[in-house]
Image 1 (cartoon, one colour):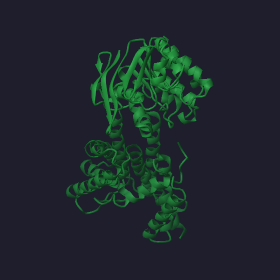
Image 2 (cartoon, one colour; image 1 turned 120 degrees about the vertical axis):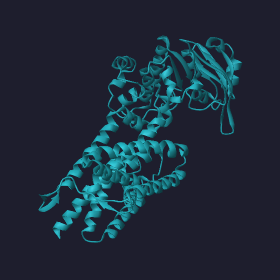
Image 3 (tube, chains in turn red, orange; image 1 turned 90 degrees about the horizontal axis):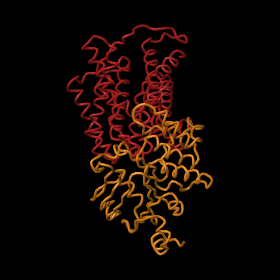
Length: 286
Length: 232
């Protein structure tokens, strides 16, 4: 029993770190563009599929770590220009537009990749003893990679011109423009970065989940819960909430089935909305 | 340098600017005065491309500003200090200061703005929202100076500032004007505006109704009373 609890809690924690990457993209897009992006789970799914194609085409798993975010960034930038920009400022319309986008992405993948879910072998095989259980090395590696990517993203926000512009435009678009910041270009880049983060999360997660054209459907509500619990637009809060939620779901799954675990997350989110609608971590970071 | 010819702006169904004509020459300081709601801020926003004009022409040096997207206008040499200061609260003082600087960090220029506002140098790593109103205003002006503008547009720079800091801000605006940078100032404090700016434009109902020298205006109490609601 102890081993099961530990295993599922560890799995939850690691899944939480990967989800944090995806939810971070969702939060960045929401914070800057006021877009409720229903297609965000599919960005993750596209990442898993790109990782699968990269492996199939080259025989090298690691290439997917570059291909997925780069192609994700390009597709994201194109989507922002063609789909999001024309409806800028209409939040309700963005739900309809991104829902349509979600269907387009899923069907495109179904046509090209097929409808059968596939599994990818982890590039690092084997286990290591950890807290008395044998734990998959790749999962530990995925956790490390996710942590490095999260840290890299926060460094990017703090220390690059584009990151500073993103923070400025997010707060006050008009003043940012009056200071010479090309806000429209920042929007395009932000959507691209959001897609790239989710796609990279997909590439990292591909060997520990199934590669499936509907693979994003389950990820999306989880990301939304993380964004809401972490505080809308609070990036560090989103990361903390994603890890907390996945860890809790892992714990609950060790004594109940996954549906009960998901219900427990929804109960937590409802409690946060009722008792602390500004989010669990609002004010935790600037 | 800056000229507005018959500029009209509509916002929704409202006809806010109804043919504004205004000119600021190189090295000149001009004040744009008027009661609340006559269109002063809209005029400044139209110059910066933040609202679209319905008709008319806005030129700066050899550039027709209508041909440029708003974010390109600061690069032509126009600095803007918006009403309410527009400091990014989530950015540090240093990040705010350099937000409009293109290319490498300009430490020489930083040193210059720190001589104007030494207080900012002590607060470089602080977030913008931890500064007092007066310090935020200093930062807003310093941020403009970092872009080496030829013209600075200030929208009520002393509004809501502690009196102790108002005189410092006023002194720096005067120094900026003396350094050869042109100034277009919107200011509720008429006395301050007339002290800082030798030229004055009075606005009423979206149009300029008086333009002339500040010292001439002082001799026309009827105009001051009618358009500014003040008695001298």
